[in-house]
Image (cartoon, rainbow, N blue to C red; front, side):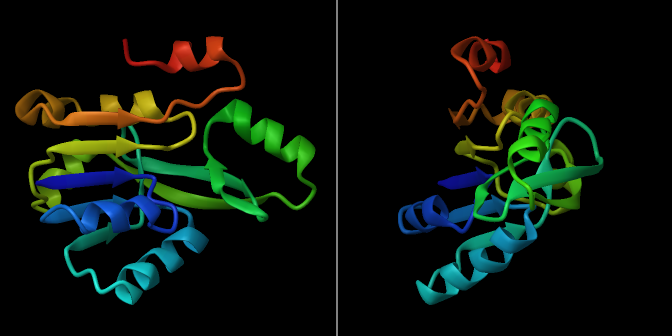
Length: 161
């Protein structure tokens, strides 16, 4: 079984997946989180994990990622979240990150076919799914989506129904 962990943070779920599957493919664009992810995998002895430093979306491009330094797991590129963070966090951090699509990365890096795709990317879930259209149609992996939004209405609006 192969699992794609989109928005891996520091690897909590990647560690879980790595202990139970043949291959894990992680994507974590935040430099701070990405720096800790391989260290956590190494500390736990996992060698069946590939770590990519890119965000996942619907087109290949560069975007601004923003986060609260006290809560780097909440980083987002979604416009409303970015505006909100800038308003409430005096020292919000920004970073330009590359965005790729799962369809493109699958082909370019000869990734294994996914059996499960976990997506936790703070408001970019639909963009990630749009950029994985061919992969989803071809392999039909199970999906685990963590939906984000200020209200239930926003979460439903972002839902891939």
